[in-house]
Length: 141
Image 1 (tube, helix red, strand yellow):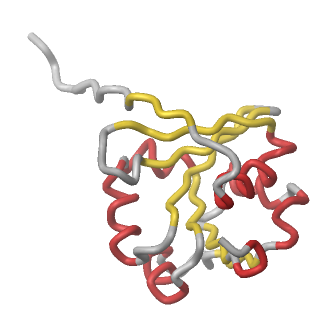
Image 2 (cartoon, one colour):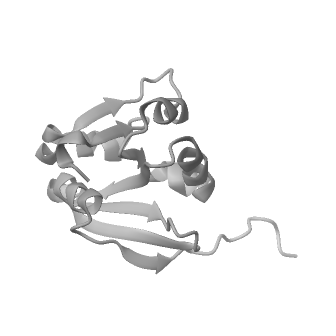
C-alpha cells in the first residue's frame, strides 16, 4: 500500500475515535469524517477508502454483521474497530478469511496512529484470538 494515497474513513465519533484523531501519526493520512447526519456505509461505497475506522462499541453491539455489510459496500477497504482504556488502545478486525476469530493489536494510546500505520502497511501484525461466545440472555428455567 502506498502510504501517501491512504484514505481513512472515520465512523461516528465516540471516545475511542476522538482519542485517535488526537494522535500525531494520522497527520499524513487523508482522513474523512462521517458527518452526524450521514451513513458510514454510503460514504464507504462512494470513497472506497483504504480503511474504515469505527468505534469498538459498534462491533460489540452489532458484531461481524457490521463488518460484512461495510465490506460488501467497499470491497477493498479494511474494516477496523478501535477501543481505548485510559493509556491503552486496541485495534480489532474480524478475520478477513471468514473464520470466527478476531484479529487484535493492542498498543499504547499514544502510539495508536503508529500502530495503524503498521497494520495498514503490513509491517505490524494482529494476533488471532477466538471470539467470545455470545451468552444467551433468555431465562434458563
